[in-house]
Length: 227
Image 1: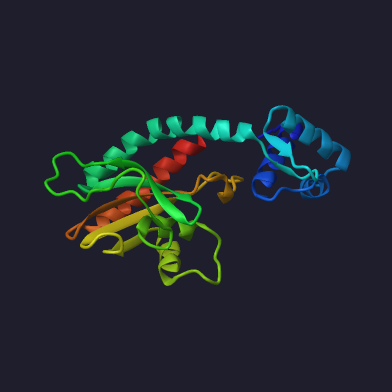
Image 2: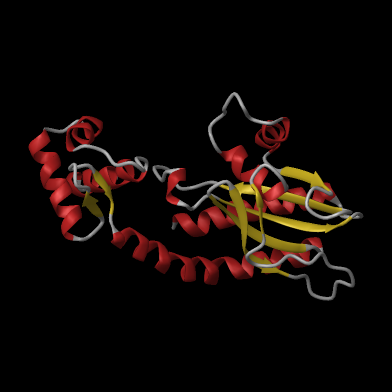
């Protein structure tokens, strides 16, 4: 597949800047891109003209406000596309289905779907937040990150299995299963798009079938954000 070299370099530069919260110098960015510094200056100037990057007082390059605007426009599209998939998961498992996102050290519920006709449901509210290290949703997100010496046994197990299963960590008697939603190649985990999909129910959930359904749904959502 042929690509436009200049556009490719610009997008790569944007991704590198996104992975540098404190900013990056033009010299270091040029080294990362493996281009002459003069070329890097032109790339930065173009991105800056579209407010995709900005320069700090000391000349370092950071993300600009336009990236936040693009991210905000992504959310309604994501919600529209993912909601039917989430409802299908809830009905298949007869459990409350959800999508959660990493926000700093916390895991925040951003979408919820209830099963139709279920007599008993576990209440799960959009905006609910808990530490990433607790609950299936956060552990599933951590499992998608590169291995680290401080990883818990739960994270290592979720990485091996492809999903996380927890019991009673966030609510007494509740069973949670979640699988991480992998980002498209080249997208940094620092972009704020780390997410997982899962279900939560009272004891009695067929965890094997639910785990299969959750992992299948995660792949469906990955397809939605990559096309």
